[in-house]
Amino acid sequence: MSGIWQHWLRKLAVFGRSSTEKGSDKTWKMASVYLALSLFLSCSLAVAVEIQRPRGVSLSNRHFYDQSKPFTCLDGSRTIPFDRVNDDYCDCKDSSDEPGTSACPRGNFHCTNAGHRPQYIPSSRVNDGICDCCDATDEYNSGSVCENTCRELGRKEKEILQQRAAVAQQGFLVKQQLIDEAKKGQEEKSRKLAELQESKDGKEDELEALRTVKEAAEAPEKEAKDQHHKAWEEQKAALRLEKDKARMALAFLELDDNADGLVSVEELQTHLELDPDSDGTLTEPEAQTMLGEAPQVDQTAFQDIVWASIKDKYQSETEPETPSQPETPQDPPSERLPEEEGEEDEEEEDEEDEDIDAEEDGKIPPVVSQTEKPEKEEEMPPYEAETQALIDAAQKSRDTFDEAEKALRDLEEQIRSLEKEISFDFGPSAEFSYLYSQCYELTTGEYVYRLCPFSRVTQKQKFGGSETNLGTWGSWAGPEDDKYSVMKYEQGTGCWQGPNRSTTVKLTCGTETAVVSTSEPSRCEYQVEFTTPAVCQEPKELDPASHDEL
Image (tube, rainbow, N blue to C red; front, side, top):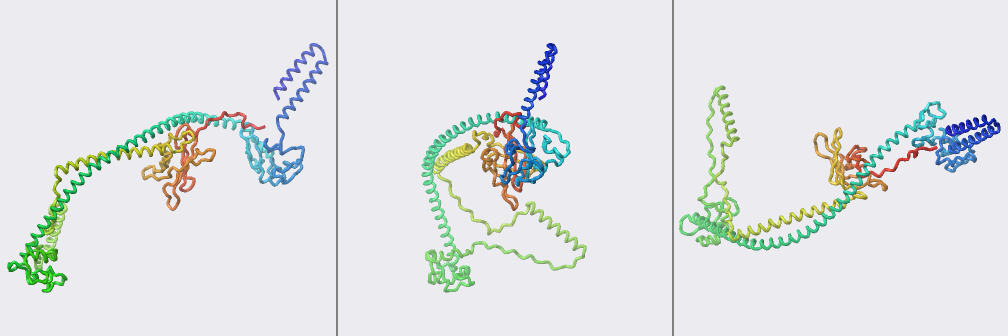
């Protein structure tokens, strides 16, 4: 408006000079009329630009408030004369007739906030003495002095948005690099997987060939070892038989007390350990039964009939018996003086201490009974040179086979690991793939938090202690329109008398990849803020007039 006024004042001055020079009143009058008409049109234009609407109504709702006709409540429940709009009395149930006063309990006042961000506030805050709108329009009748801070707030917000846009732009550029690297990485992984699959086929064929060689080498080895073991078992059986015959002959000689070449019932009864019913006596009928109902037997009959039934119980007369410990005679008690008793007690204690020390130092060897000598097991003789050569050849083929089998297992593990990595959902363009197999830490006052994307989240005491699993990788859990903004980790370590721990990871745009904060909003449920360029979107140009509203 001021520009228009200055423009027409200059026009008027020009006309004034012209009329003075020419002396024409008619020209001066025409200029005055022209100036008045121009000013009227300018004022009309200004009024048209500033759209009229009731206080507290937004531009988007102004068409509901037409001053030329009655007002209908926005819920359609009632129609009232327009002069009852903003009359400080609530007529509509939905409070729509009082947008600019605090008369209605559920009303909303619209702050235009030109130069900043429009907003709605509860109508109860209108004229309450507190400035809620940055343009001060909510305190029009409270007496409070409010400054219009919208321009300054808009400027600050614009600076913040510009900073965010700069970060987003830089992060987006990094994201494009990540996408390019991911594409190359995926191609490299696919190529490597194909190579591993091809190598696996070759390894499997090689392993089968080695298996055939191994089995061919093991067959003669087994045959030779079996023959050796069989010969050894036969040899041991023969040795046992010889020993048994020698023991039988010795027993016959010992039982044959009169050396007549026969063992009689009476001679057998001299060995009570042969008592079959363990009643402490070996009766004549019992002895005769052992002799096969014969009164006496020779050595051949003794071997064939008697020995098998008594050899487990028979005790040879030539076997040494365990000597019994002789009783130490006790000296008769003698009267001793108290001093002597004390000295002797001290000497005994010293001797006991010395004995204990000697035993601890290993100076006194443990007492071993002569009857406790275990019978030494006979060792199998070494294999013959030809058999040992077969064993060595078979073992070599087994070692070669085992190495090839291990190599195949390692190869299969590489294939599984690579297939698992390729199958992960790393985002629309695999932009999150660089996070795989990486871990990021944040140290707080008490804990060290560790996030390993696509693996798990852990918590550990800052000054030692074991890790607590806060959840293993579950899935992407963002909203449908922003799926890749949230990660969910589940089935962590169980809380005491509570659920398993779980963690929600919220991803935000940033030029760096880092864990920026952690919290536990509810018991056993954790939240992690994580910045990464992989979620950065290409920023849109800021519209400086986007928050202005007439």
